[in-house]
Length: 295
Length: 324
Image 1 (cartoon, each protein chain N blue to C red):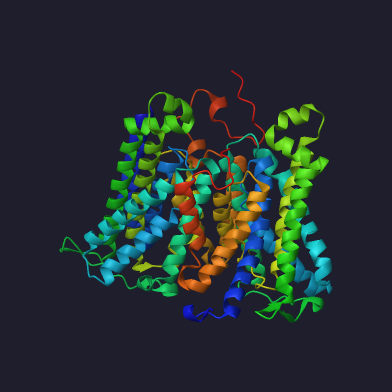
Image 2 (cartoon, each protein chain N blue to C red; image 1 turned 30 degrees about the vertical axis):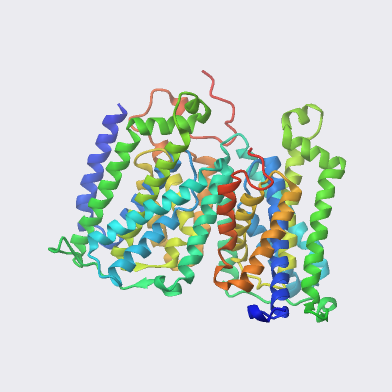
């Protein structure tokens, strides 16, 4: 069936799987960006660095402390989240009254500091992180061989995204968050501690990035520059999807990941730029993004 | 008053520029001038139109590649090489600007960054750009067929002349009716629109001019260093030029020049220390944003303004307007 295109089913489904995995990372990261943007009105340029730190915490925990993957999956987001909270309370908080450009520049500066520091400490060659024992090996599905760890990544990401969606749309805390996004002053008048909410939101967004970093550690090399390159693609995803909608972030992330995977099958040379091209097309046809509303 | 201060500044700049190569290593000066022009180009957009582009490396680095290509492969003379790079900046600026101004604020920044990353990947993949090696050994050639640019001083004065031309052009644009409308749009876009100005077109023209000048800066850089490389199109280059503008003072005429000299000097000093340059750049970003929003020139206004409370250093929490 696939012969006429010169593509094996294993190759096609393999690339679709890679697309799904990349898409999962796009989804988690753009979700975090969307949540932070909603309440803080800041495009978090540090997001890539936070993702990278998540991976490095997992790698460091395994190498220096002998802590395994599963504990890292809990500890790394916590650590990155706490660092995020420190950043918010000590630095970002001072800028809420200024032009939004300054928030962006501040987080960009922080990203440079973090990335430069890690590069200085660990070099750029990258470190290996082993797949946990339970998820090693692969399952033969008949039409393709599915590596267990990759299946887990897709499953965990989608679960995390849906849980985040439920948290925001279905809980009281989420209702506060949505109210704060609409009108923080009014919410404050109702006696809700908005500054605390803002701090926790930033911490949560950072933790999401850290979680994605741990998931990514065994697939990609743990590398100080792993975050910045990914983040720019995520920005394109965010422009396509718009930051206004949680579900929009998730769908756009996974969708564009798939598009990228399929491009690798049919036109490999274009796979590095296809998401940017998609962004340009969306800007031409639907300037506000697929799900977005202009803020 | 402002005019006479700028005039003094211009004379000082001219005097320093003419004497400098006899005091400082010319290559360093040429690098500083190329980046100064690049930062001035960005400042036209950021400081006067209020649009933060994080993708200007695409115009700078892309133009460097174009100039390098036409001069090494097609054997074009140096004037044509510079022109080709500038035209490339203008054309790419029209395309990217047309796309980016469709979104406002922070989205605008993300669009420019993403589009520039696309250029980076293209430069990495296309054969004509030499991939990881870049284009090396770009000939400097003879200017107008008579002036040998391999002589350091000749090259320096050409770079200085290009910089001055670009700088003067920006000065004229900023002080023209067009520049005033641009500032009005920056301050209050809905009001400018209600006064009958086509905000989108003004922003687009500013973007195109800025991109063209960034292209000119990139072309000049390619000829000075005889090299066009991936560093020139990388996002960190876009960040660097934003930092130059921020440090020197956004929306000031001389700020980007001083910022560029500052950052290039820093780069020179920290070159032996590897990634520490990145860290220091980040620290300066953070410090500027938190303590020093007006930059060097914005904070050092001479002669001092009579209203002190207007020009004092920014305190972090000074959100409420100054009392009158």
